[in-house]
Structures are given as C-alpha cells and as structure tokens.
Picture 1 (cartoon, rainbow, N blue to C red):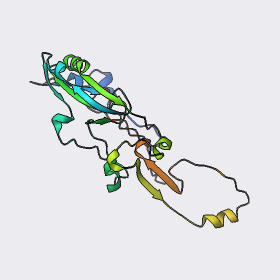
Picture 2 (cartoon, one colour):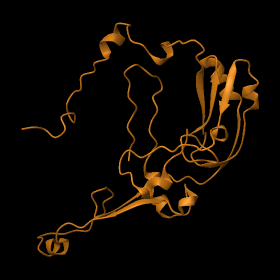
Picture 3 (cartoon, one colour):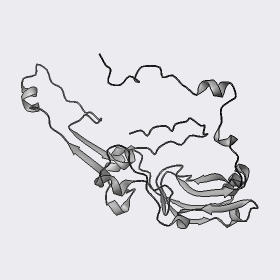
Picture 4 (tube, rainbow, N blue to C red):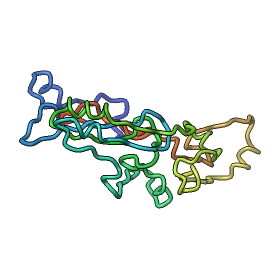
Length: 220
C-alpha cells in the first residue's frame, strides 16, 4: 500500500547536518565577495498603521552606508503572489514586498539599508525616523468580518474569497439521524467557509541563512 504523504508522522533525514557539525558548512554570513554590500531591514513597529513620513537622511549621512531603499525609490512595488488558492479575486489582497503608505502587520519591511558591513547597515536602520499613525488592528476573522477596518481600502472589503459547497442531502440525513445537537464549527470543512486577508500571517523569514535552508511555511 502506497501512502499518500510519506512525510506526515515520519522522521525526515537531514542531509546537511554532517557538514555543519564538522564545521564544513557555509552560512550566508561566511560569504565574502569583492564590492559586496550588506543589507539591514527597517521593519514596522506596529501591526497596522499609516506611514506619515520616512526620514532616511541620517542613515545616508553615515560613512559606509551606500543607499537606503524605500517604496519611493522602487516605484512600482511588486506584490507577493499567493502560493495556494490563488485567483483573480485575491489579487487586490496580495501583500507588497515593502510598505509604501501603510503597514499591515508587525515587522513588515519599510526600508532597506545597504552598507559596507552588516554593523553599518544596522546602524543606519537605527537612525531612520519613521512616523506611523497607528490604526485599529485586524487580528482575526471575526474582527475582519465586521468590515469596520479595511486592510486594503481599494478592495472595499476584507473578504478576499468565499466558498459555498453542498454535498449530499443534509436535510434527509438529519431527519433520519437517531440523535442531533446544535454545534458551531470554524474550519475549512464547514459548508460555508469565509476566508479573509487577516486570517493568514505573512511568510516567516529565516534569521540566518545556510547553503541548504528553508523558510517557514505560511499559516492559514
């Protein structure tokens, strides 16, 4: 019998452990190239807010800081596509790779400092003056469904996608059941499931890199 998914409940061999334990692994911090720059990211200190101003001049005044990149320098900011359940209906809710006028989660990238060293890049991040007007937080689907605070105002709603599915004759099944009781379920198996942008957290970012590393999966 062939198992559909052989990874669930089974140990997965880590092929990279031997070289790292023997000191033969190579991390991103070990790399050195001619003219290589180091990056540090300024991230949002609030979960939801409107960006009033970003003053990058103090960072640029530091010797060894090459550039400070914000959405203004990029122009047309790319959006992160959804890997699962992607459809034209979800396009208005795709998260930009860097915040322009609004931040929608704690830690969202706001600016990137490029410098001759990692320490100088971090110093540059510390000097950037970020003025953010805090907005009401949309922390779960219940708050989101009230439609009182829209994360993407252009979309006009926080409801990104709605599914309705019917399978079998539910009324006949209940009529013939020996015992019934009322219950409330909040999972994707319910006949009517509502999914909003606030129900999903952004993809995690690894704190350090290796030549064979993976990022944490997103949670919905």
